[in-house]
Amino acid sequence: MTIELPPLAGHPSARPPSPLVPACQLSVVVPVFNEEAVIALFHARLIKVLTACPGVHEIIYVDDGSSDGSAQVLDALRATCPQVGVARLSRNFGKERAMTAGLELARGAAVIILDVDLQDPPELIPPMLDAWRAGADVVNMRRSGRDGETAFKKVTAHLFYRIINRLSDVPIPSDVGDFRLFSRRAVDALNRMPESNRFMKGLFAWIGFSQVTLDYQRKARAAGHSKWPYWRLWNFALEGVTSFSTVPLRVASYVGFLSALGAFVYAFYFFIKTLVWGESVKGFPTLIEIVLLLGGLQLMAIGIVGEYVGRMYLESKRRPIYLLDFFKPATLSAPDAT
Ligand code: UDP
Ligand code: MG
Image 1 (cartoon, helix red, strand yellow):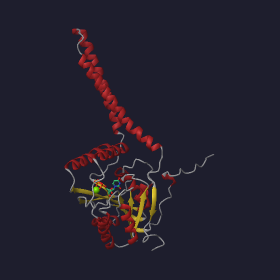
Image 2 (cartoon, protein in one colour):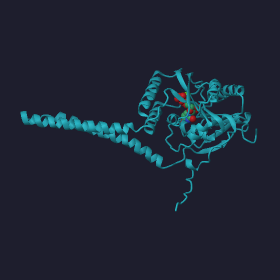
Image 3 (cartoon, protein in one colour):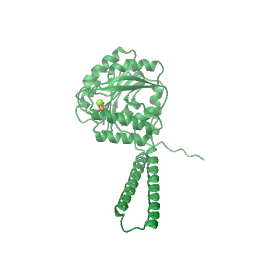
Image 4 (cartoon, protein in one colour):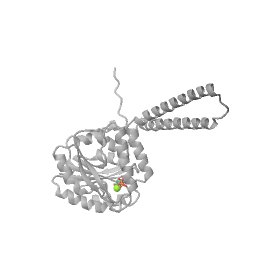
């Protein structure tokens, strides 16, 4: 006899499937966190581009718990522009989860994720749509250059993509950020991913389908400042590696094995040496060196295991990925309003 378990409240499996018939042609998902200085500027440029594209479009601003005037600016936009939908998360959940929320709320046949700071020019939307119409499920936008970013950020970003690609089982395209287009079935696939460690660049690559890559020059921020201090970027990189690769776990065991082997060989050498030449009570520094080395290696291995155990712990709680304060959909593209 099988017992039917009720769906877990709040767990992704409890979410209704996305609508089969897309309600509009294109949804633009825009995560916003404390961006009052730039929203109006961004919106004006985006609307200009969208009006030139045929079809019905919606723009979903996901307010990721902003504490400045962003909420008011978005409300004002929605009051004047019927294409605007606004979702507000119950607190700041971070860009990855804000994007997850936007992808789940989007109703378009295609969905584009766009930063609000104008680093990803909205003018590139038409070529992205062309690639989608030509059959691509995912259009990746690769930064061929980055204006207005520090040399340190450029170098670390470059290294990050190289390392993650070495370690990850699925190839993650280099220098492609979150600025991408997804077809409806790609979005549906993303929405089925239940994990709460949302390393979106990995998830985007994992879904597969036909992916094409277009190049663009990444612009400097139009206003405001970056919400990614280096510490946050470091944590993000760690999250990426641990959620898409178990290689570090293996490295830990190899390093442990090699050092143990080294210690064994060294002990053997000492044994022979003492037998042949004898030994006074010298060698104290060597001893301390070995103790320290082995202790360090063990701590390192435990640390790596700990990273994974910690993530399993967080995952096992099966908390919802984000909580919505409210969602006010766009009125223009609602199924019964067109
Ligand atoms: N963002 C967000 N939640 C956060 C941090 C950032 O929704 O916790 C949004 C932000 O408003 C912007 C985008 O994510 O639209 C990219 O952020 P930012 O420009 O600060 O990152 P960078 O371009 O410096 O990597
Ligand atoms: Mg930015």
